[in-house]
Image 1 (tube, rainbow, N blue to C red):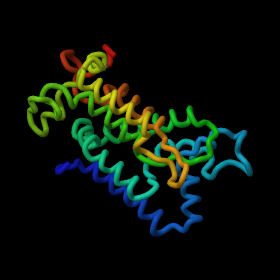
Image 2: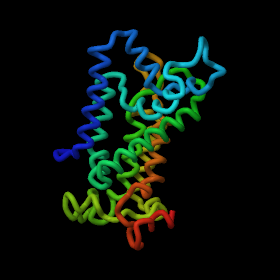
Image 3: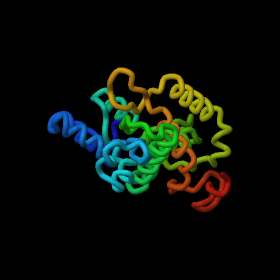
Length: 245
């Protein structure tokens, strides 16, 4: 956390800028219009429920909101909570993937999180915002290599740079690792019981989009090898890990 990759700092700065503009520049009506354009709203995809026409943005918003919702946060606590989780897990992935792969991975997990939220809340008019779906994907991606021998959380850590480039275990092997299973149990249990992470809009009675967390996490866990530039452990070739999942 004391040597944060530039791409992670850039993302955090962007999140802070978006929040500052909403809080300090936009009026209340402009902020509502902003959310209608860029938050993820399941009702946007159910034309049978729309009253008075479609949501602003049309077809474009149906596409870009799969990503833009993750740049918006309800308040400083929400932003700070997500930033705190982005720093360790996002940094670990950015060091391993490099900038382009990391950004692609975060975009895919963000979209997957929104996709599962849409499937479980189809027709709902309440906007969803927050980066926790993508950050959940980063958590899942990080555990694919963090516990390996010589990795960042391994007992025999090799070094700051080398530890982030150790071969990852194939998914079938990773899911037999007691440490990873314990992490999965705690993570899923925590989300199911408390729904801590990406929230919807603030206000009494608003629920937490825990399904989005699970969508992002599963995408990160399953798609990690598609982005990983390091050959899988014990198998030759850059695509080796994919052949054993």
